Amino acid sequence: MRTSASVALLACLCGALAEEVADFSFADFFQGEWVVERSTVDINTNVHIYDETRGRYNMSKAGDHGMAGEYFAEDTVTGDVLSSLIVRIEFAHDPATGAFKTGAETDEPSEFATLFNFAFQHEPHNGMIISHGEYHGAKGGHYQFLIPSPDKWVLTVYQEAGEAVVYLGQKVVVQNEKSFFQRYGTMLMLGGFMLVNTFMQKKVRTPPAAATPPDAPTKATVEEITDEPKKDQ
Image (tube, rainbow, N blue to C red; front, side, top):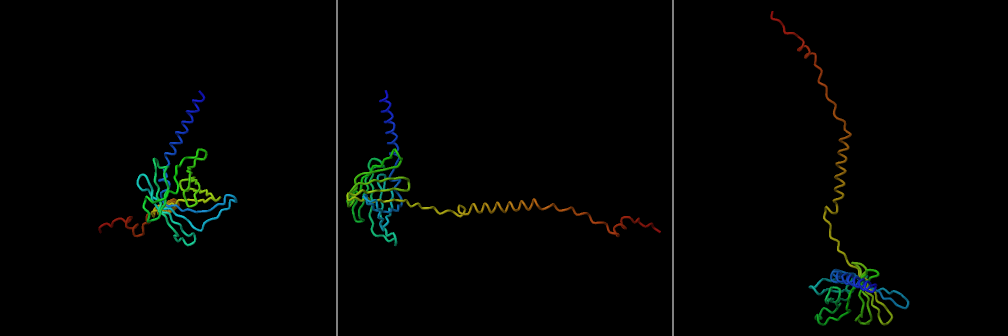
C-alpha cells in the first residue's frame, strides 16, 4: 500500500516536472540582443582572467522550429567588431531541445558545425533552468548552460586542460520612448491642482462686497418734494 502511494507520488512529480519543461521555450528566451562577458578560470587556483573582448548576440525566430542570428566579438575599449559568426539553432521535438550551431557567412546551412546539443530542464531544488553535455568547440570539453532569470544566462565550458571558460549573458532591454503626457502628465496634473487650489483659497478669503447705501437727497431734491404747489393768484 505504501509502495503504491510512493509510486503514485513519484509519477505526479515527474508529470509536473515534464509540464514545467514543456512550458519553457528556448526560442522565446533567447530571441533579442544579448551582451556577453567572457572570462577564463583556472580550476586549480580559481583565478579569473577577463578577456578584452565582449560578445554580442542578435537572435530572432526563424519559422516554427529554429532561430537565426549573428554573434559579434567587440573590443571592450573601442567597440570595434573583431570577428563575427552566423548562428543557427535547430529545435527537435520541443522548444527546449535542439542543437546550437555556428558557421561563417559564406557557409551553407548544411556546413554549420554543432557547438553543443541542449535539452533544458528545471532544477527541482532551485527552480533554475539548466542544460549540460559535450561541448564541440576548438578545445572540446563539457558545458553547463544555466538560466537563473529571464534576462540572464551563464554558459560554463569545462576544458580538458584544467580551465573553465565562463560566458555571462545579459539581455539588452529596449526602453520604449514615452509620450509627452507620459513624461510630464503628473507634473501637469499637479500644476493644475495647485492653480485650482489657489483660486479656491482666494475665493474663500475674499469678504463679500458691502451694500452701497442710497444717496442722501440733496437740498434741491428736498425742496422739490416738500414744497407745495403755488396757488394761482
